[in-house]
Length: 110
Image (cartoon, rainbow, N blue to C red; front, side):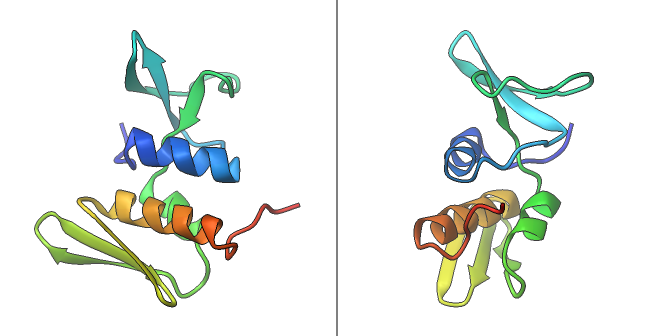
């Protein structure tokens, strides 16, 4: 299974962006989010939340976005003046994407 951003960050980013088609999704079983791989068919939007990998996020963030280690369990992601810190690079990049959606730097692609 891939290393992905947290369920909470992935859910919030998915609600803002609609970015889908990840190889791994979160599915809530008995109130707990679990990672599942999508092997056949499409995930169900009302049930599944894409689990975003770092590479996927970096391809979607604006050119010039960077992620770096600040210590053993400290990561940061930055674009222009916006900086997000988290315990994993995936959550730092996902948090940055969320902020960039909120301020209008990222928008839906037609």
